[in-house]
Length: 89
Image (cartoon, rainbow, N blue to C red; front, side, top):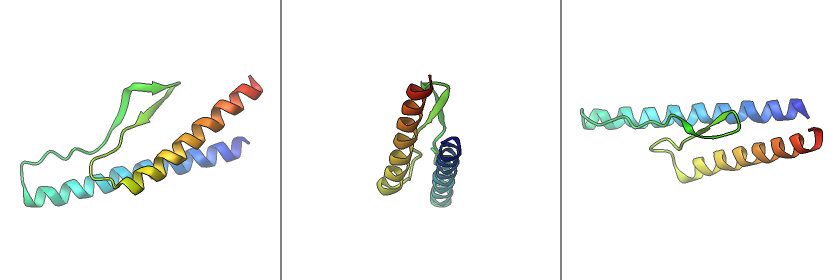
């Protein structure tokens, strides 16, 4: 069970990095057209946390489809963690 949770956590982290990178690239492309444009890439939101893990805010420029993939994976991981904690607590 721990290996599966670790694997899902790793995949979620990789998706967060990919979404952030895509947002930065989109912002860089926008800067080529408009030199004074704020990059607007997403950051970890420290105020809105669940447990000890900070939540990941949707970066600008991320498609609805890509964001939905992240949301499904994140929700699945949170539910798995809650059920695991309830069983073994």
